Image 1 (spheres, one colour):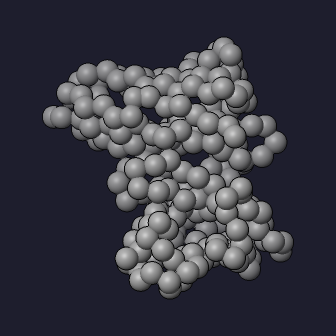
Image 2: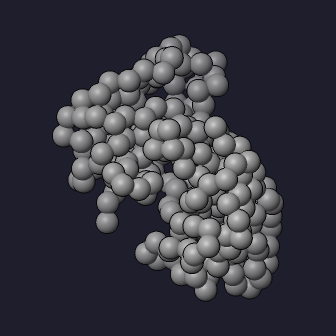
Length: 114
Length: 111
């Protein structure tokens, strides 16, 4: 199994600022995924991050708002830019579990925007 | 787009009771998954279903992949307090890890 850590675990931010969330995996993976979980809601895929190429964003998410870096096979960052209260969510990264075709999830970053 | 309808939204049960939750979709999926999310944690896979009609157990948990490939249910028998959490169904198409999640069922177990 993969062990995934995220930093920070939670943060409270002011409107208009930006926050960068880090995701670290204990093994090399080609794909990493970023999800948003709004309060009381399900998980929605933001983007898929492959090392060495631009992230692929899902409908409704854009690079200017959620820039992603993927500098190597064990690390990725997601930035939430120019935040508003509507961005208050849990942000989760995940990686594929190739033996089951499912995903391992990180513990999430709980973001509150005031 | 593809959507999963998960029900019930929440359940309040007594310890020892059995629980059933289900998921339906207007789209066909090739894989159905059930995850559990504890407070402050990411979802953890409980059961993965790969074939229509498949019935799979994991301890006190049993899940089935509907014959039409548009639905799945999860049963928990003899619930215990640590079963508390949010249970998500998820559908996946072949050829990638793109996963659609249901809205979740919040389970509360009273000791």
